[in-house]
Image 1 (cartoon, one colour):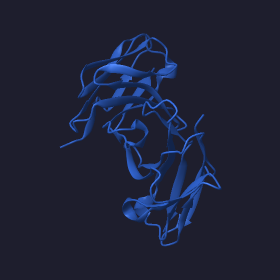
Image 2 (image 1 turned 30 degrees about the vertical axis):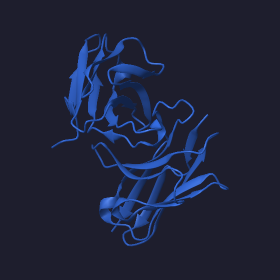
Image 3 (image 1 turned 90 degrees about the vertical axis):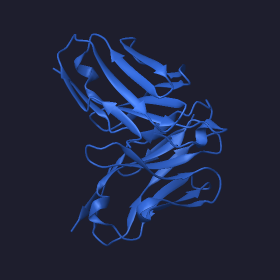
Image 4 (image 1 turned 60 degrees about the horizontal axis):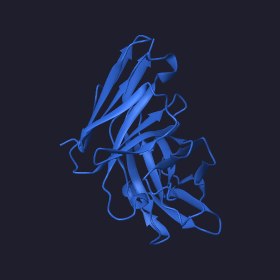
Length: 116
Length: 115
């Protein structure tokens, strides 16, 4: 009965590799997000999709590519991993009802990525 | 542009004493404000939200926050701390200018609860 789930929970990989993180929500929400939390616990939005359409794309290297096969899934693919990509990545979802900014977001448990 | 500033990076209280976590915001619109909590190695959980209704907002686990427009503040309080309250707390404003649902996070406050 998990609301927002992410896999894997931990990901350890070498520099230069390509990896993916998967996110699924069973809340029926139509908007999903990816956030990055750095080592100082600062959280910043990376991407947002609404009904499979990209609506937020912050200043993120183009090595990061989100993919939304349907509105319940938002995956994050990272090419050519770098040391600086090490962080915790959180997926979130929300339901758009009128003004977007009123709507709380539900977060997944996070994926801790370590690049060696 | 919207922003939030959490005035304390670390707060330490004794169990059973009041908790005050301070947050100031900057917004050119009437803001939507949230407090989220992150327990160690966990995701973020919504504690409460303000969306221009009552200025005193009650949340889960006995937390509440008061929106004060004149002070541009949204401080989080709890009358009596419990050991399980030890966590990272984030004050968050929604970027209403873009109407994208984008959340802007404060730097976080680590709450330590001593027995």
